[in-house]
Length: 199
Image 1 (cartoon, one colour):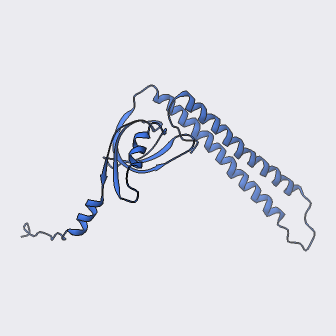
Image 2 (cartoon, helix red, strand yellow; image 1 turned 60 degrees about the vertical axis):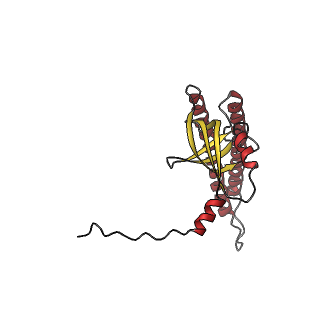
Image 3 (cartoon, helix red, strand yellow; image 1 turned 180 degrees about the vertical axis):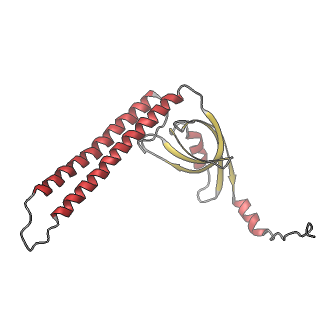
């Protein structure tokens, strides 16, 4: 999750760009090593007659894996370039409000935490935010009893282009124990079709 933004500040953008450089060097370096390995295998003398050494197959496999690693490096470069441009554009505007139900939270040691949210309009959002911005929600979740079902509704503001959370303005917790117990105690009867308008 080091490639997710925690904020749109200068320090966070510099951290993302440095992280991008490290990942690109890693994947591109591995791809270059495999290309050299594939070239060496392709230039090697053919195996003696009667042996089953799959030199050509290994060489082609090295080229294929190298192409995949190079594609990953290009995808990381494109993603980080797009997300940085969106964050810079978000600085020119104001964060938007959103209210919905939290469906998941992925913590990260570096970069932004990933929040899955379902809005009141039924839309699904993947948002990122810093641990400081999500601190009120984390404290509220930590105070709940483990293992008990609940629904956490939040009201927050986020930057629409980069999908970075600016602030958690409010939240409400609904414990679902009573709702589940009531639904089991009072089963809803099947509704019979009405024929009042039938002639």
